Image (cartoon, rainbow, N blue to C red; front, side, top):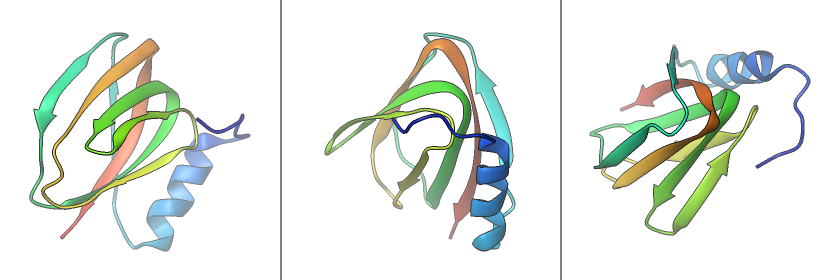
Length: 94
């Protein structure tokens, strides 16, 4: 997880604008678990509040405010939301 980001939403906005993607926001309560699954698109995700741990083939990756994760097409992944909940912005790239 990275250090404190002054404005995680501005960071997220810049990431998606730079790549020509239109994100949507989502939030989950503390402890929410996503079972392993995959997508037919490349997922670009930026955490803007709280934390979430993604369970990836190469190991766990903890995201906090301002952290980015790219999940390639077809990559099986799950996730567990941290103790304070999470808000992320994400978009798919075909």
